[in-house]
Length: 80
Image 1 (cartoon, rainbow, N blue to C red):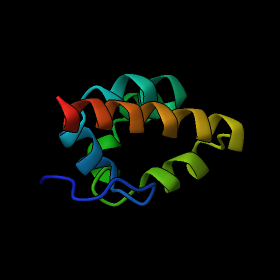
Image 2: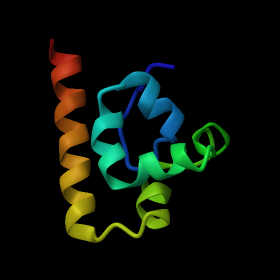
Image 3: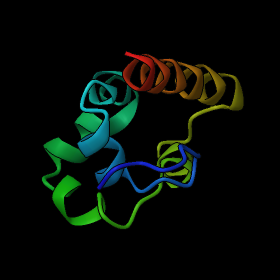
Image 4: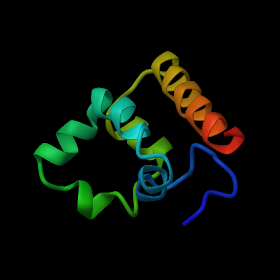
């Protein structure tokens, strides 16, 4: 599925499909834990990025940094 508009309400499975490089950023902030618990495949198509932030109890400053990194990745992909 091609992303028409990137928002924090994007479902993780769509984000990871469209921007595989975002996995590295999210991995550092809890995605690894979901993989280790073997539940990523179960929740990825239901959990939004905003929900991921809440689930992993990521503070607002860090959320902003992660979101900025993802937006930068998306911009590079769509411009190039």
